[in-house]
Image (cartoon, rainbow, N blue to C red; front, side):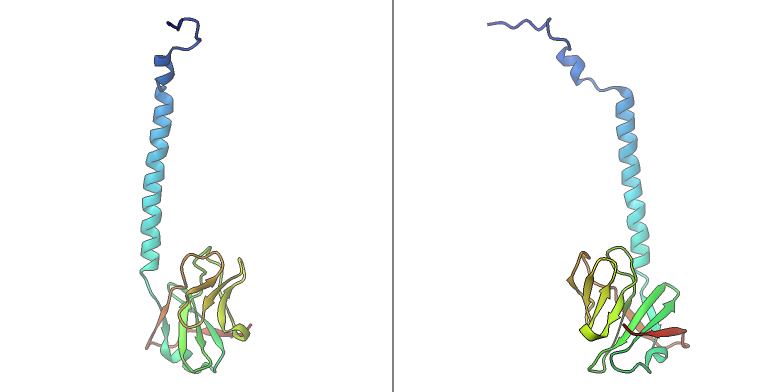
Length: 153
């Protein structure tokens, strides 16, 4: 049984052929995506590897359950004196979309008001919400006091 291929409107070889313009557009778009992604990863890594440092003397006065937002060169950090007296400090940016995290003293956790995420008070780990990773810890160093404002929620 033989088929008549002449009556078909497009030949199979012509169908497989890709136009030069389509190829160049696809290739250029792929290159832009790869180099853009590499640049974004480098930017992210550079900003993640710079730890936030809070002056130890600037947060030593915090009473139990209180929080202090401190402007530091790498951004803003949030220091909290927990009920047991321990002092914790984290980057104030939510890892999901960068909204400022607040201390919810009555619930003993950090919260992101933008997308209703919550983070563990001691470790900064995600309790619930859209973030895939926890808060970045901030280290306490001995340095001249930076200005901060006490906040309560």
